[in-house]
Length: 227
Image: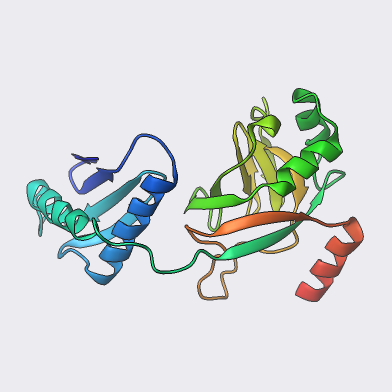
């Protein structure tokens, strides 16, 4: 673990250089501590895979002061454990067809059938490491390498909300319409970004999720009930 400046008004606390459950827990513990014991002069903090970046008012704090306060905060979390049980969330997905136009390409890349890709993708349990890129977009760990696939050579200008994609060794769900280069293998009718609700995102760091295959008819039923 080490600390380093980010510009002239932020400190990065890096717990590890390898993504994994241990560093993820440290990130969450420090985030929880800062929620309840905010550092005077802190503007906000941003948790990521293995780091927590704390932005502060340079008029109130100097870098060395902010770093020292964060060192003490990390010391306070050394013997802490996360009390809350991880939420288990099931996300229904209609794979292939118009919802997953790249499913066959992902299968061909890995010398598998589309059904095998669906089975492997939906049989894994995924950990939400962080939310970022777009409101509610989950960065997930736990995807089997057997279905890994490179990003598209030409990104799409508009990916439908709810699209489930694969890029490299990662999988994720686009919560809103946005450009993107991930390989699309399916789509969920469940909204991940809900601006009229509190909190506005369905998922949060620490959740575990499973993708549950559904038919196109079931997808339509989900959408009808959501209206």
